[in-house]
Image (cartoon, rainbow, N blue to C red; front, top):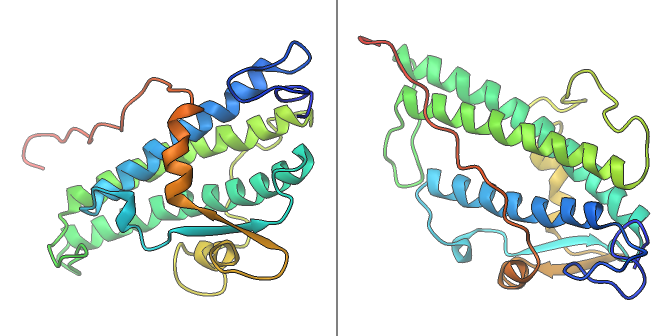
Length: 218
């Protein structure tokens, strides 16, 4: 085990004196946070169980978990993509809310029910709230790798991505390679990960954002 993590002979729940407890707890807390995010997003579209998620297997470069540098390289790709995705989702949901309030469109959930403008505004708020935590994860990855300064950007950005879902410059296009088998990739089961997660994750405080308050008459 890398000395920047649990140290030789250490584990996620037993960090050796030669390891770094703080770094290990960063990742343990991040695991819990990501599960909370997924649970919230699932609930907002009317789902209750991860067993119904359309994607049940993820594919990472073989050796991702063999060395810290390999892991952080993949982490950076994923965190930067999700930061961009949530930034764009904030904008897209806000635009949907505006269009819905103006009667220009009707956005619907998977069962055909119509979302209200306030629903969509809340989705924008959720996306912004999650994006902030993803940005923390990006920085903590740099902390673990001793990359200074860890907080190395004035603003989080979308890089060259322009949408969440559609087109070659979408977040989905960047993430698709992690969803398909191929040479040099290793498969990881979502259900196996979720089953084992409680034995290693570290719960942290904080619930979902509360919907915004509206002035009377709005």
